[in-house]
View (cartoon, helix red, strand yellow):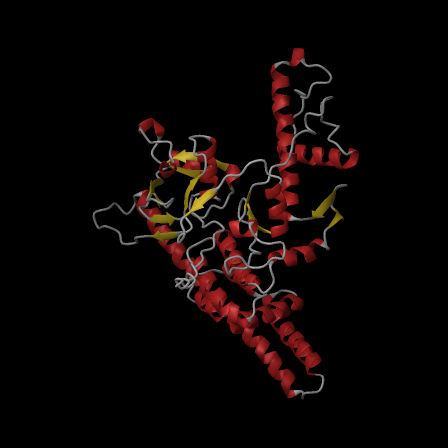
Length: 460
């Protein structure tokens, strides 16, 4: 997302006009935020100096036991700073080490931070994603990751940053996922007021599938409750639905989950014929074609590592084993055609005005298309940029996925939007500022065509 704001006030404009006041306020907030970010960068530089000072103090103690000396010196310096920062010296010591790493290993990121082109949240995710890269790969990663973060929210930039790091990582996500799966577990944690929390760590696709199935079941109960309220006299004992049930969707999800875990099926809410138990989880994924055609040995295809991750709807990468398993069990596929250079969504197979058009837009708009919003496709309304009532066509070039909040904002406030082609939207605020929102690139990888083999010599 990029923005353009004008702060000059026309002498002929009433300075008390709310739009003029909003424009001036926006400019002041922008300047204040940039100042705060620069000061945060200065603080990181100071913490890095503190870490270097601790190492210097340790070096003066002599080479013997230098590791312990550095640790003790860091504790001492951190304790001094903790007194003025009003926080734990352990926290300060950890921040000193992280700041020193930022300054020495991520100079491009630090420079962008100092210039207020990115904020502390961007810095954290770039540093976290690049931590596993070697020095050579990290130089390339930093340049692209910083460029992808400038002008974007941390939530939106995270998807791109993690994808770049994954492409450059010495070990594939699949290998790391296999190790991480060894740590899957369930735990419980005490809360106040007689409550406890149950936690589960498992594969991303499994967790999304569980949540989706619980949501479907909970919504089925809500719909049945509504219907039962309309037809209270006709309700039978074995029919799903209770007109007195006023539980919210979160409460229903929790109750159905508890029933399922305790009984094996959601018997506390199900009908005699198992209507809720028949609801299947849905998980939407995007899989690079090179992942699908990879050999069982994982050898590169067309010179590119085949172990490129798939993505869940919303952008979270998943290991290739899970992606292939889900793909193998799919009864149908939607092929998404992308531009070979920009990665823009061009079309999907079996284009129809309803289902296929929605799938195309889900593929193109993997988050709400209002600037800074990151809600996934499941929360989208398909909005006509030019209203259908005014002749706006129901086609890809006149549609965009908006969450309900921003759909309402577009129709009931002075915010305006135009389509600029290739899925690019230009938003104009009430003050006249413009914000360009580009669709996120899907999981695409371009390759150079190899030189053709030399022609065989003609036989004599």
